[in-house]
Length: 309
Image (cartoon, rainbow, N blue to C red; front, top):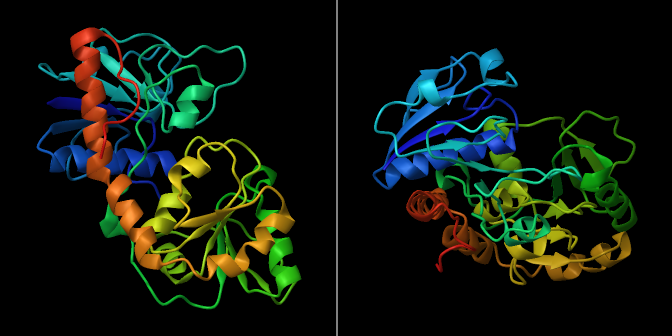
């Protein structure tokens, strides 16, 4: 197929940028499956697997922006990763990575990122996020620290991880913002990227994901799985869907999560990597999207669920 991918920020992203990393992974996956990809994104974007059609970011963010004139002839479908207010003339779908404010109804060409995410929007079509395994380093023998990786926002539950580290006297690395270290058990390292992030994920005994909101997917989960790192999580949103009993433990309170720490020590890093390889590879994600493209083009309806593995 000939696919045009549309995003409004420069790629690849510097720093975390979850959606941006998914877009790059999708382009790589589509190319690996033999599809032709063009990328409509701001100048300076560099994704070797796609032909760049540079569009100024200010234009991409305009309320009335219509990408139709920019889409190359004979393109089969346009895939956007942010909402377009006007419907392009070319066939198009878009992926919602976040949540929807109350009172907004998403159009029928919306693809969600988990079954839970789709269900909460009254829909059935979803494609799980995937990542390129070459971005991660698997490590079976873990170092002496737990990890929290993400925005230091109340909804992410980072304060639960800090409280547990102090009460259980376990070393915790918090990556995602600068804060003073108030305990010998907690170390803040700020926002991480590249090799530093890869090594932190690989070396951690476990990843804390004590989300206090309904996560649409939770990209950090599969970053940990690719690294062979099990996850200690709440049961919010898609977390139980992405994880499994052999790769995670779940709790609904700080006390329940802390009580799971002995069980976490028994998780097998190889099982974490195996789950990532089976369900969250960038080529599997790309195949799921191709299924959506073909269904939309043939019937004007998106398929429910994901294809069986």
